[in-house]
Amino acid sequence: MKKLLPLLFLALVFLGGCFGSQATVNPYPNDPHECANNLTYDGSFLSGRTFKSHAFVKGVTQADAMKRVARYILSDGWQINNTDSKLGIISASQTVSYGQGKTAPLNVGVEQIKGGVNVTMSFSVYSGATAPVEGVRDFFCSVIGAVQGK
Image (cartoon, rainbow, N blue to C red; front, side, top):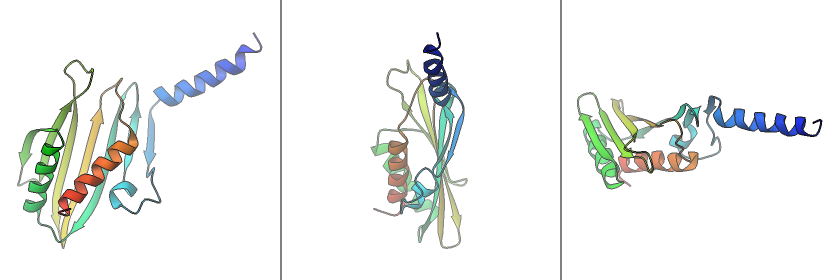
């Protein structure tokens, strides 16, 4: 029994990390991309996880940014559920593999500010689903690249 206690403790620590609520701020502090530096996520495998990021893009209007975001996410396989050009909001979703009809929502906000636009993004996965942080980071930065016209 004494040999099992350390193993049991390690198992609880590991499972606590997998299932407990976690908040991570700036997991990529050395990445040169603003979208990666501003990436945060919280939640857990059991509660679901939400990823967020934002970046400023110089020299782009809100109208152009909205068109570029919509075209990019549509070409990436997302279903655009709603857009509001005046508010600068695009809501989209993707069907989750093995999710029995569940979807993962993506929201993009585009706000015109002096000299360009501020783009904010939020992506969520439901409980029991996972998304690799690196993949979400790359996608968010690709959206910013699309806004920049790249």
